[in-house]
Amino acid sequence: MPSDTKTTLKPTDLRGILEYVPQFRDHVFVIALDGSIIDDENFSNVITDIAVLRSLNIDIVLVHGIGRQIKRLSEECGIPISDAHGSGATDGPTLEMATAASSEVLEVLTRALTQNGLRYVVTNAVRATETGVIRGKDLGYTGKIEKLDEKLIRLMLSEGVVPVFSPLACDRDGQPYRLNSDQLASELAIRLKASKLIYLTPFPGLVVDGEPVMNIPLDELQSLITKHKKSLDERLLSKAAYAARTLEAGTPRAHILDGRIFGGLLTEIFDKVGLGTMIHANDYQQIRAARKKDAASIFAITRNAAKSETLRTRTRHAIEEAIGNFYVYEIDESIVGCFSLVPLDGKTVELGAVLVQPFYQGRGVGKKLVEFACLEARRMKADRVVALSTQAGNFFRDSAGFAEGTQDDLPKARREDYIGNSRHSKVYVKRLAPARKKRARRA
Image 1: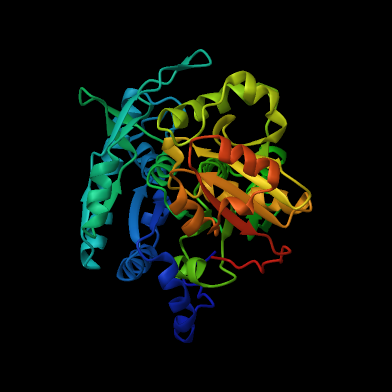
Image 2: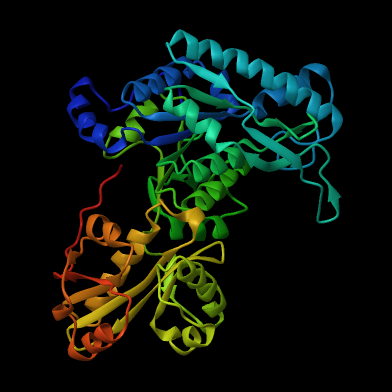
């Protein structure tokens, strides 16, 4: 696609952009620049778009690739490379060329950031370690992320600084390792709880059977990756796979788009149609009814809550006996949250044990659990949900839409049990209206 292609975004669309400004203010966008985009004549326009995002108080984290530059150096020097993208093995000569390529890219990138008045820091906030031997093959100097200094990165963002990450990182002893930039961008988005992960590529988004995919939910993307693994370009397959992983971990949106198009980044973010591939999380895909084998994980989560007296103590046996009332939130086959839903009478359902593992708190998991519980309560023909809590009142009132009630809101049998225990929990009530369909919008 030619780099001088114009987009549909017009100055008159600025009114539409203003609609999104409050929505994205102080949010984190992780933007991954393919090495070929840095070599493209549209690169200066990409940095201008990034400057516009910063002017709207959107926090930007930049990750750059070096695949194009390594290949060029290999051809110029006549030295074969073991892998260009940081996913296969990296031998000594390839690591040397990766180091030279990274220096070259950083010079171009930091000059462009400076010309656009952006403050930046090329940071060593990532610590690497060797990947080692995978399936019998020693990957040499290919590394994996051992540690991210989140505190340092957030400090930079709080000061309006753009952290810039190279796909090279050192271990504890200063030995450099080659990282995969797609994976690095994904990990940063997950750990920083980014609102968007954006891959700028030399492709018009995901292209399947010659047709670009514009808008796709996470589950369909995962199916697409499985069905079209051999036909997708290797670089797109990598980005699609890491986008899926990022959304599974809680980031709501990922974008794969052509970085060679003038104004393309702003169009993708602020235009209702966009121009690349937007992947959106399925809000409730990761929530399912608990199975008996989940009892141990649920017990571990509830035991920690019981220690702080957030939750009434439950034995593992009691959880196993009541497993039919539990639901779990699962990421990468690990249980990160749960809740229980118990019918009290024909009209009232009790919501309990709404718990999220500490690492995933603050990512909206608890709110999704409650929203799903209310949908399940509607399916049970209930017209209200009650919750009893000693310490989570702010969450139920401010985030989950419950109102504070009294013991009189409990059905008789549950009220008698409530009076009989000494926890003195507060009662919260949510009345259920019929579900209404929401119009999907691209954001």
